Length: 422
Image (cartoon, rainbow, N blue to C red; front, side, top):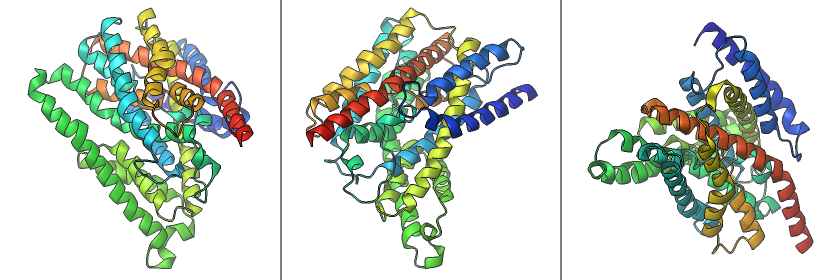
């Protein structure tokens, strides 16, 4: 990066900090959301900066910057999601989550990959990568559809809100579970005949690294939680001293450790947060940690969206044609809603209206940015890489606008119907 590029990055960070402090409150429960406005500001900034001859800090010009910034944003968000969920982990009570992960997500990946290969004319490896990239959901960009945070007591109304719980828990896990399919796309492009490596991919990338990430995160979270809340020396209990910064320390340490031993760091961070949450579940310290993580998450998210918006008007969409745009529209309005609705048909926790709302709000966001940047740093997909970036950016912006504008109204009506029923 040149000196001007670095100064531009500082400018973006400063603007994002100001926006993070003001916009969420100004635009709460409004049709125009903070992410929508930030993307728009970024787009205007991209036009203005482009005329000066300075390169915009964009995925195409500075892929490593975008990759690591999005990576940090995702792992911080995953810690926040894990801490926010009140419901204890159990196969039966998380039934809606498992259905979204094990049925809806693979169906979405397959449908996007097939359409990308057949209609957009992407090579098979690039089509699979696109399907994996667009798989993660991200309720951070539509805060009205996620749980608000840790709530003391186990009988709160938020805990019983199956829609918010399903969408939040899905996002906490599918950011990690998309990774094996990202590797599938990379290996299709680089590893030769599929039969020579497919068994190894299933055993290690699909199963082994997921299991390792879950185990590392759960053990670390359990140990950290016991240290925070039950350390034998009372004066050393961080929960009693009220130091929420340890949540960030846990994020970085668990993610780094898991990646070093070969597991998926994303799923480890989420598992760590859930394991920490189960220790002294009603303690207010969980709220303090979540509040800190949430503030950092907002700042990082707005930085990424600001840079993404600037890149939109600086050439990121140059490779987008009507077929790529159609794929984004189909994913948001048809593929995700249909796949999620079918996966939840036999889920008794959701009534028909709640099932439709849960199916519709498959928000695309920062996880997709990270996966594209990561995959294209590992393998050169040529012209297809630019097409993947263009389709991904278009789909994210479409999701930000459509889901952001409708979330407040839809969830308010749903809450009103619940209140009237009781």
